[in-house]
Amino acid sequence: MFWRLLLLFTVLPVAELALLIKVGRAINVGPTIGLVILTGLVGAALARHQGLRTLRRIHQDTARGVMPATELLNGVMILAAGLLLVTPGIITDAIGFLLLIPPARNRLRTRLANYVKKRLVITCEPTGHSQPGGEDIIDVEGHVVSEEGPGEEHDRCT
Image (tube, rainbow, N blue to C red; front, side, top):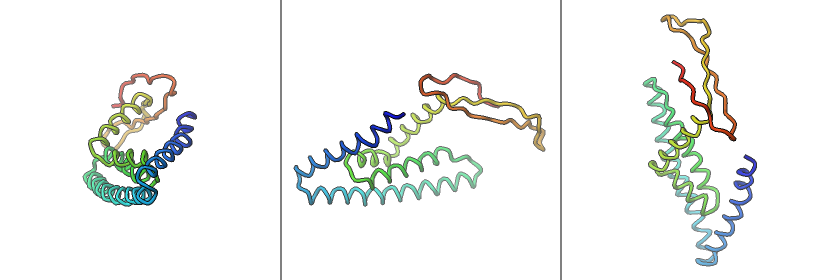
């Protein structure tokens, strides 16, 4: 985890700076600054539009009594895209715009879900309490498995 954070907070900014310098030399400083500002404005507008649309879907799902897990993850990814797009840089802009493309976001969401499923162990224990309809109440507890080893397969709670 330390090495990933080191990459994120040191190597990425240095790479962004080097790339911006190269672009600045190729197209001059003014257009480079304009490009950074333009991608920030366009990206923020796109993220806002998609975020509001996602928020409406979350409200619709909850009004119907459906858990909006997919839309919540979309919302988190759209927020991340907006943050990346207002951060000056070409690499972060490319990643941010990629997160605003629904098929790319869907693929990433699937990969994230699989990653979490491999590392999350769910255990279920009946409490001995019942709901008014006679159904048992089951306590569910999640544990994150160490990153060194894959998670074990467990039966789902029913």
